Amino acid sequence: MALCIRTHFSHGSHPSSLVRYKRRPTIDTMLSLTLYCSSYLLCCVLRLDFMQLCVVLIGKPRPSEFGAVIDLYLARIRKLVDCEVISLRGERIDRRRPEEIKSAEGRKVLSTLRPDDWLAVCDERGKSLKTADLARIMDEAFSAGPRFAGKKRLVVLVGGALGVSSEVRKRADALWALSGLTLAESVARVVLVEGIYRAITVMKGHPYHNE
Image (cartoon, rainbow, N blue to C red; front, side, top):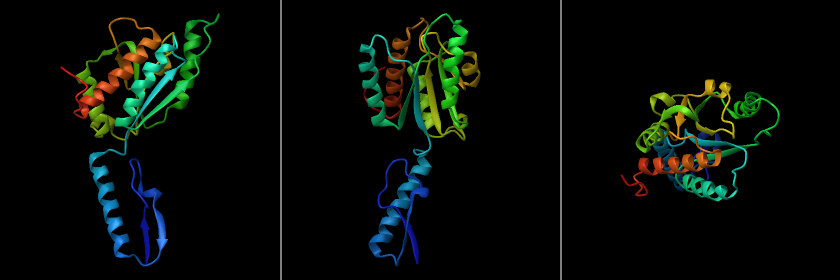
């Protein structure tokens, strides 16, 4: 009798990673299989395995001191949800027109995206978000709500020093305004990652956020 079973279960595992054993199953093996299947089915019901948060950043933070704060909140986020960070090299600001520079950076952004990505672009012309709004979006994303049907990643982009290209805005599923003020690129990163962390703690009932 052939039996498929994983040697262990972890967040993000999938039946495609099962190992096949061709031997008569023991009671212990059957119990392990039952526990694995129960855990996997629970994850399917809760939709915990099917959404990843991805933060896309362009260029290095300036001043560099901002980097430590950004990394701090990214580390906190990763303790709560599956989070990937993609850092793209920014274009040199030279004699090219600003739109040419943004288009060059935009092509890099678009090359990292997948068809099943839900993209939110941080843009001052976007919709203003409160913490409660962002928490609802995160909760809907990680529970496979209607607007995220068929999506595997929630991608959030902070553009470069000149902002984002029109091509990237057209690809976006949502435009988020982090503030009514125009924010420096590195300040926008700090506001975003702290805001995401705060929203996720609200979603998970963590005491970090106080109304």
